[in-house]
Length: 414
Ligand SMILES: Cc1cc2nc3c(=O)[nH]c(=O)nc-3n(C[C@H](O)[C@H](O)[C@H](O)COP(=O)(O)OP(=O)(O)OC[C@H]3O[C@@H](n4cnc5c(N)ncnc54)[C@H](O)[C@@H]3O)c2cc1C
Image (cartoon, rainbow, N blue to C red; front, side, top):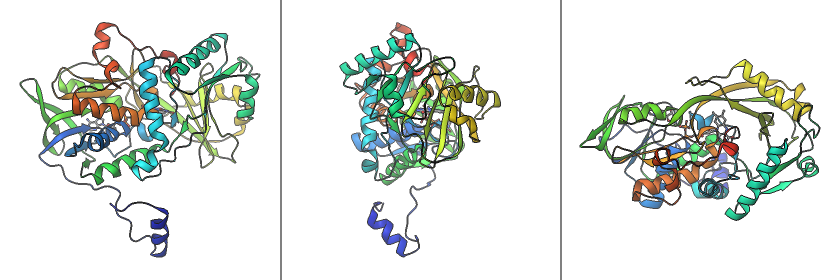
């Protein structure tokens, strides 16, 4: 694969861009692979990438029922942060955030990582105590965050109103190296690098069954036929329960729609990400100028990847309290994704009752930020059978009551 560079862009400009190669191949599946990953979202592709890069396992297929990055990875609001309370969470999210810092160079693909800073507003006494506690925990974990005053919040984000009609801004948890990245580019960059290593990314191919022999995984049934493998990674977010059923086990997980919307593009007015969890909404400005807005999950389980009017009303009403200027904006489009939520709001990266079959799910409303760290840990788990990054996130924690309670950091926030 030819490398992308300023020189290559200049060269192609001179020959009317006729020399670019396809970013990844679209092969037909082989009859057998060493490892199969189901789901070509960010987590599945990152798992495949680190299997090849860190562990030399390159005879890998990533099987996707739709198009790569077309699930939650291409539908999220791209917030990246690692200011979680519990040690195992801070470890995996900070690993991911630090990998994001030079992921563009690593993948030779511009993922547009923008460490513009993330503020989580404290709008009640309870939130002040909670975020101060998180800032102390983060200091011990080596995650750079600080609790800042309302005046500092206003300096960082001048369009904010500190005197909301219901909840004033009382301070905020500030992570200066948090930010955003281009979500599609993360999927595309990993896909291109996987394809370059000789891996097969097979799109429009649905996994319809899991095959096993003597309690061990032996392959998958798909709409393009049976494919054998000795290791299987299921990385399908909102469809994890469906895949687990195919493999013969159940997950403590629910699938719920989560919605977002963007406004018409306007001139730059906000260069940080602000999350207002008490009123229930968050906002950042994309490079195109659109205000990217997200709210909470739907109140019911579902598999619809659609937006709904009551959500726009609820989310925009909440955000107008914090940013009165957005009341005059036109909203351009809205959409939904299906997120997979566990009881303790922490992910599952685990072996399963079926030998050779591994699962990565439960990232809920906040897994985009975790993609590189999750892929790194999941690849290590699949290659070696254990990983320091994933050991606390096993399925057995639900049986043993060892929950990693992140309901404050991840219950609403993304
Ligand atoms: C509106 C919204 C806003 C969000 N905002 C943020 C945010 O700001 N920050 C953040 O960190 N996170 C955010 N998230 C969460 C984040 O998007 C997800 O946690 C993350 O993208 C999950 O990635 P994934 O690779 O696990 O899943 P996905 O990207 O959903 O990929 C799973 C893939 O599996 C495929 N699949 C399913 N079943 C099968 C099958 N049987 N056979 C083959 N393929 C199959 C699907 O088609 C899909 O492409 C948001 C999510 C939504 C919906």
